Length: 323
Image 1 (spheres, rainbow, N blue to C red):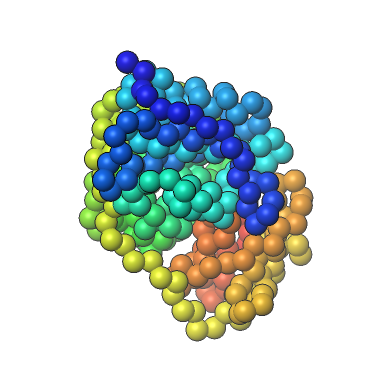
Image 2: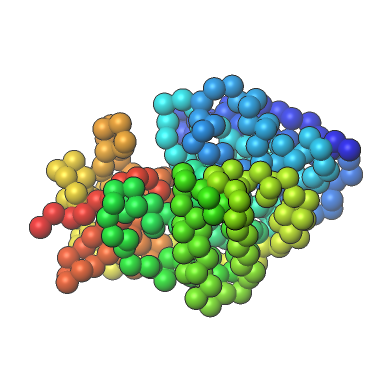
């Protein structure tokens, strides 16, 4: 029986400028006393641009056409001409909707496929305290993405970074025949997380006969949605640490166009080119020693013999500090 919900299409404004259009499904019927759950779904690269209605064929909206799903669902849409997910814009969109609707803040769930899987993991690494569970499908570890795409050696695992996820229930899935995003991305993420102390469940489902679209059996499965909505957010504190000396992070990285400066108010700011050669100015927020977040993801400053190295996780970009 199809689910009973209303579907709205709206435009989000971020800092006064047009951001993502999005689809919001609102459940009908008796409202829980503590508010409805919310499922946030991030689509893949193949769904960039075009008519937003085609997103109804993916994720929770596809499932809701045939099954009951007692939750709000949020499906933002990346417009033509933009690549990847901007975390600041996603944060402000979620904040707006949670202020407007009866959503339980302890039951917000994050999932995504392919590009959306990498985006979901970056968002969770940045703000693990926001979510009750994480499900990156056909995505995996963004730490592997830039070195793999540029045929470089993988960088060392940052245990401090991944420990941020130790209280977050995680569901990974990947097709072993995937020739778009290698299954090793999910396997190595599963292995890394499994070797660290954990306080929440960690699941990894492999599909031996499926290539890239491993999201189809996942999102078509009532068992997956039942697992997701059973999870409850733990009380995770996430205050910004204090960095004693920001000046050591200043300097050029990669090319003459990639550099870090100290901005007004004493915050660091990364200046770098996007994939189209356009300059970006990205304020950095400290997450820990040598680890910062910005609107495109989490950055690590890796030290090698006293020299700082920088890795941008959310984009196909690797910035090395020049000698």
